[in-house]
Length: 450
Image (cartoon, rainbow, N blue to C red; front, side, top):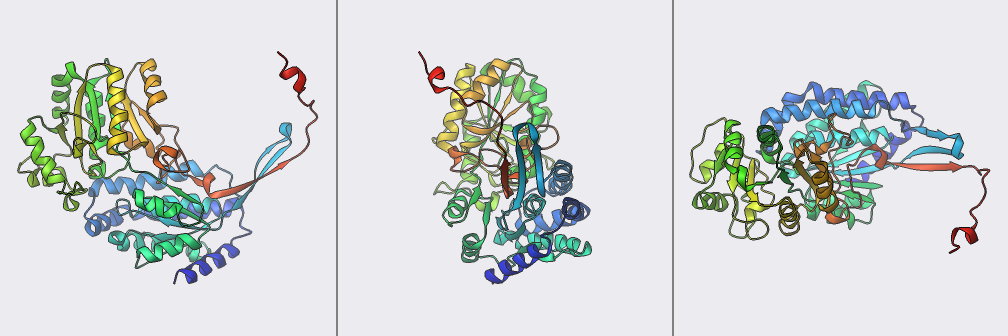
């Protein structure tokens, strides 16, 4: 089965080997457009099938991702000669990698297949999707819509395929036989991708800490935290999971958060009920509550809250391994902890990632102090530090300079080869054609004379 899909993909690549940049871009555009047009339908299917996330937020994903990716890709050169620099005697030529295996998660069954395909197709590659089993119907529908769009343009449908009945064994075979692997999901999945013998881009686990610095607009931080914690019911790997704030502003911050609709629990006994509900005896997250609405989680902990509540905040006594609430909850829940000095906040942010996961991924800070931002960035072991914006903007919207991505590499900290967002440039091989320069060679004796 896998070999047949690989053979079909290579036949499709042969059919487009002479496509121009304009022809490839047209296919990328049409692939984005069809998911945009079916955004609500796919969002409904994704939530109904997986039980994960928030319907309206998934509509936003299914509209924003196609638009943002296309806006980023439309002017980029990725076919043939992509750069010429006569002053350096340099020409750069792009070559496709071939067939890319894309392992996709249940949390993003529509936009992860689309985003990876848009980047891959931009480099004239084919993709075979290995979806999460619990999202196979929604992901298959996504792929079939793209296939129809390709055929309507006279291109081969098999530029994108999917394993309709995914298993661990089939995914492993695909990764072993493809030319490149993009693995978006758990740490175990990333390790499997790197162990496949095929070049691979993987992503590490998320668990972003966010620091509120003294002097920053507390109301703005509270409003952005609703987005950072509650988007798609908190199943984003770059969602805000730990909020560190100056101890003396606790009352003001909590009031601002409550004004934004966030329900906060400060009593240790109440927080303990959430800890028991969200985690099983073995310390693993309770699967029935992953990605669920805030009122559902509150109900499981024994509380009734307004139905429109998007975010729950829990005050913790300490950070790190001492409390499972400091781990990636994968729900619209944020742990709250006060700090005394800014340096103490940075230390806690780092320790929490080292002990409770998320190292290498993303961190955030609300601050008007450039010295503090730099201090944080020079110490925190992450690929992305989001300043004065919700941490989920790590995916690369138009509002910052990060490249749009559905796979966010975490560098060597997170056992990843790439420290940054995976995009089309990572899915092509580039030949450098170099000519001799009329320059004088360095004089070693002069350079190293003491």
